[in-house]
Image (cartoon, rainbow, N blue to C red; front, side, top):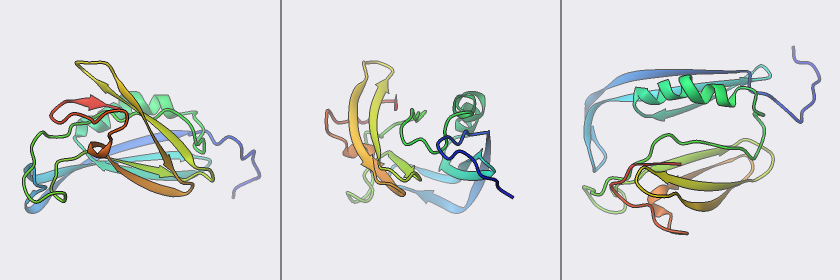
Length: 168
């Protein structure tokens, strides 16, 4: 049974991460690559006896990064804080595409979930290995909504180059 608590701060108590290698029934493609399996990375964050779940399709190295570095950073942070620092450990937009545009145009997508009661005003900075950072790119994720952002659609203050590794 839950008891009354101060609702202003809900610290994240635990972060668990798993990676699942899943063979496909037949070869698949997205217009840029073909594959016969995929890896699903699942993260569960618990605060005040409530567990939230997030997932992505990424290499198992993503799970190791979350477990070995990012989990320690977010434990103790307020699960309901609208503002904060988010890190996306990978990014790459292939310089080529196969298939009809815009459906098969190579892209990288960020998916934001704002479970808070207030709009989240996000500033995104892109970091590169071979040059200074770009940004900030600004967007708003409405309260209790999700927003999916194709990074190759960003243009202000500058487009993200194709064929270049980055992180945000």
